[in-house]
Image (cartoon, helix red, strand yellow):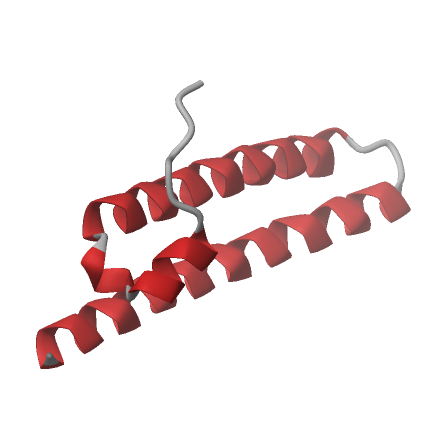
Length: 85
């Protein structure tokens, strides 16, 4: 797997808009990872044999959806700041 040359900390230190391509890649990678977690959690929720396991999987589903929304908000906020500059 080809790893990105910049971490989130690197981008924030440099100023996120100095490296927009790398930042987009990081958000894309984050969304892919969250999507995989979401798919597995939904599958676990559906196939769980007991209510406790279903509830735990449901909490993971809810948290992943919140994380996806947060990532989208961050991306939008960074876009707004770039357009103000």
